[in-house]
Image (cartoon, rainbow, N blue to C red; front, side, top):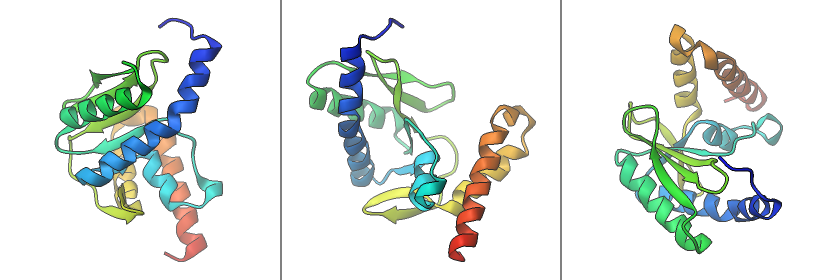
Length: 166
């Protein structure tokens, strides 16, 4: 990956809001479920939110969904800025910025469809689904590299539940 000019970096962050709106709109229209940190952030108070740069989206048609979003982003940006590349896992596709190399969204159709909640017309994985997934990953020795993140997710959900008597 080449070093970005300050102008390219500024353009990427300026257009980030456009990407957010397109990804959420597509998820809403197609019945897709946003999971991962974005889903967690929708269900916890501001002081418990975690920084994240990309979206994790569950859909049975992962490749075509990723291609559709990349195409919409390219039209919105007015140039061929985004591409779709295969992820590490089966039926997982990444929408990446060509200039920055950053992943904007991961689309996957692998695994069981998570329980979800509707927030302003967009489906997000429920806190129960997030807890269940984190607990499952904590039992897998091969996922040890992400245990800190999963423990942190469980802690944030627990603090929210205690604060709001869920």
